[in-house]
Image (cartoon, rainbow, N blue to C red; front, side, top):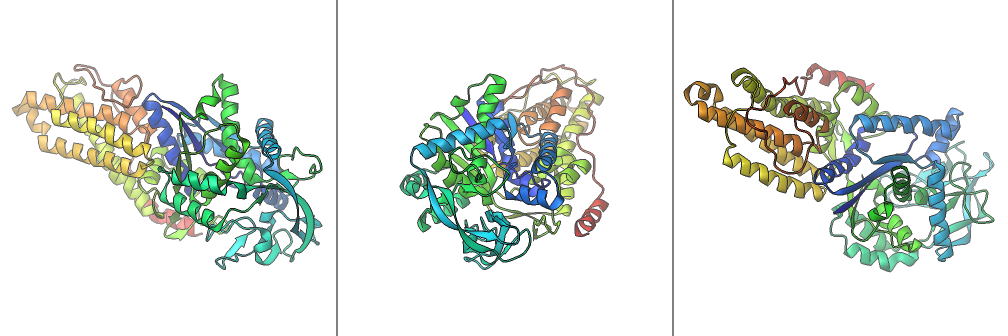
Length: 540
């Protein structure tokens, strides 16, 4: 099996918050799982370094867009590395390599008659003396009546044109813009209505929100969309007469999946084509606000370029993560920022909580109380406790050697079943249920230890005690495989302690009489006093 995994590209105009990680983490879980199975995997993403949010911030701070993107791209890379994201390549869209790939695709669409010139009315700010790209225009959404920007309404997910907004104003100066005629290039998206309807009927592995939202757009009828804009920052349009415009970021960013694949191949001597062929299974992982770009725009570009490139198979589009019951708002600083979280808490604690509370099918909430209690209760109290009590027992009563015995056949059967059932869930993108099943087994392993009472068996039934502890050691060894996609740092510690050379996705057994190295605490307790402290910080 060959697997391509594309993680959505975060805008390099501000720090990552936990909502970003909650929407992207399943991509890393998938990549780690498939590698454990021995599959061919390519997992790519990068920083979206173009678009008006970056240009606006640069203008506000009197800095260049490159300065903004350099800073946040480096911060993103650091955060993803600390969180254990195992990208084969984490790239950026302001590289010459990416520009070339986008321009090549753009020209293919143009030559195939799918990009054409149109004179249009556009918002023009007489105060700023410029045409306004969509995000430079703000107003009221005509569909739901909420505040919206000129490209998309965050409240109802409608794709908008700035001219549709009511009570428009220029984001730069606040003045009301006028309308003027100008030429732009348009992508004939409407020509893909039939092929995308057929594509949707075959979408067996999309999240329900992706199916429903895509069906809504198709029912409303696809409209041609502008692919150029009036900006100084972005990719040059490779067509005569449009030298002063840039390629619209919505067509630029999604092309990153292909450009990153090609860049990975160039750097590593790999074959990018194998990850874009018919035989591949392609996962795309993002938040729900990115659905139309992955279910409509990107497939239309791939179909229009006519290069036989593989379309998305599985769209894993998470719902929203709220914080303490309220929607994340970066403008109001109602967010838990990833650099802060990594500075104060372990990566696996973050990964565990954002997976076990992942908004896979509905909105979920991050609360400091639940985050700290889940760490102390599940990671420390269940997983860490089981590992610690077992290996301490081996050290105390078996001279730090695995007892000479065999595994309890019932537990062996349960472990084999876990590999199969957890694997099926991960492949379906159901990472939350997979982790829930895994921790249910961990709690049952603690119960097994308690019921067997090895502290009594060691004197009264030494052979039975040896089997109990041998069984528990094998459970730990296999948990270092099974939990590895979710908790990679913790599992790496366990494998080092047990002398396991490399993880895999199949039953493994530690040999009897093998010496086990002393194990430090897998998880440190978090003082519950931190709950009120963190909530207080959030509110200031």
